[in-house]
Image 1 (cartoon, rainbow, N blue to C red):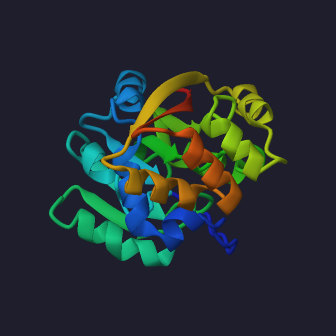
Image 2: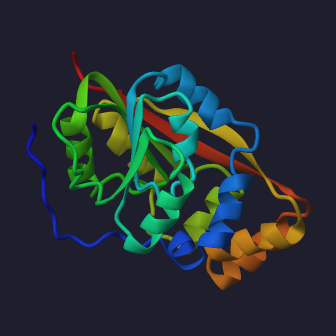
Image 3: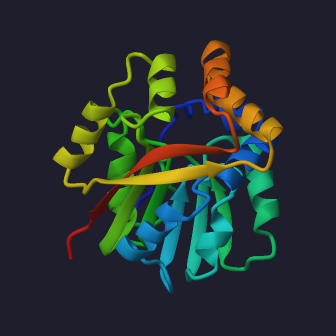
Length: 237
């Protein structure tokens, strides 16, 4: 059994899913409607028959997809109110469990998983070093960490994001990961909504009021192009 790193640092707030989990469920359903990110991940970090940990799993939306092929799946989420929702989602899946913990203190043994997946969790790059160190610790030799984040260099979503977080430098974030041995692949995707009400509700939980209203005005229909970046790094054999 490996050591477990302990941390008392509080989680960084995710106000969208923390405050509006039902709307965020609709957002998850709309994202990557054509499966471009999943297609890339299946090629780069196949998880069939392997052990997966999803860091910052929220209410567990992605856990069943991993569980369909993985040997085991662990969802790790730091925000306690989301844990019951995640556990209800996967209660019929015997190969999945959900644990309350942060990225910098994974309650897993050394060299116990094959894939660490973190989605929309490490935007800023700098500051996530403890989480990356924990991922490296729990990975088996040859295992991989896959980081999926929104690409704020791509309009229109990236422009709205930068308007709300003007100190965010997406190019610096990309360089942070590349300098630490991660690959970088840009993935164009489409968010597809069932109706305008859902589209507008999602944009309103993602952005400040003024930026959300701008975004709503700039999205005339039910589809929104959104860029992502995917970073992958393997642990040496």
